[in-house]
Length: 105
Image (tube, rainbow, N blue to C red; front, side, top):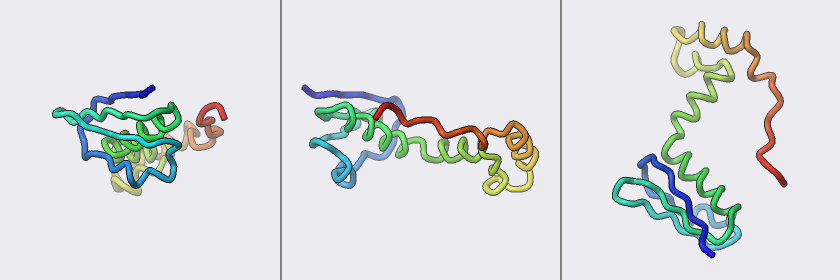
């Protein structure tokens, strides 16, 4: 059985070869004419791993910006004008929350 998934953000085609050591089975990522990645593999674990790869390819900047926003380190990136946002984030204490599980073992 082939498991597939698609996301809606265009980007650079994934190079599955660089991911092969982390995969349990052969896999393929094809992007259609709109840049939507279609992931083909035989198991869910590989599917979710490659979905993360394509998500990072398409949204790495957004993910980093969000991480900095919640950790209170946005000013390191955006400069002094973001200090008030960092102070607010530190006041809320998001960085003190325990890390969430990545899912079942």
